[in-house]
Length: 182
Image 1 (cartoon, rainbow, N blue to C red):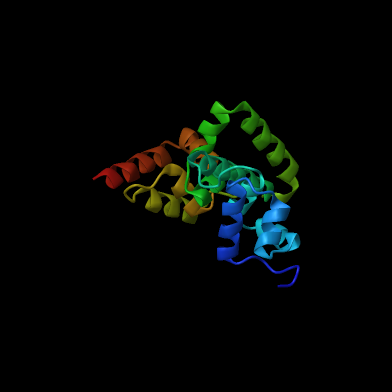
Image 2 (tube, helix red, strand yellow; image 1 turned 45 degrees about the vertical axis):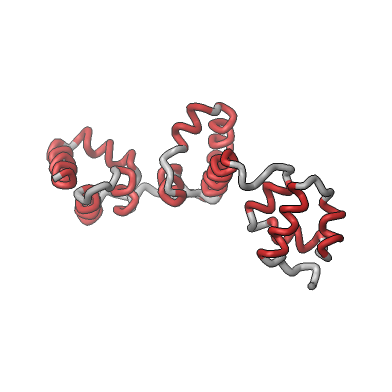
């Protein structure tokens, strides 16, 4: 195995098991015939291994929430807006996380501020085509406003602003929601 090669799934699982049993990383890697460089290369993309290297059990239930929070911060760092990050992760939990965890809220703000130069800077107009797409999606059963806005390529804030200032748009939204419930 070359030093830059990644570990196989079997090797990774064996290493995680050794770490769970309290074996030191350097000894576990040596016993399994693994180079530390390969361990680091694998840990770049293997969340379970990274958690084990941090000294925790990657299969513990609380690690799922911690991983989602880390993935959310990673998406923010890449310039993805919070509403789109929630859609990518399949969760609506970031607002709750921010309210429950002031440290996480500060981290979100810091990452968003740092990634601002990489995010979308122009305003996307709510064109007639985007309005039609949004209303079409909103009219589908089980579709949230956030998901419908994302499908139309606009932010939920743009939708709410338009709803406040345009009575016809508000009525069309209400009709779409009613058809989704029917």
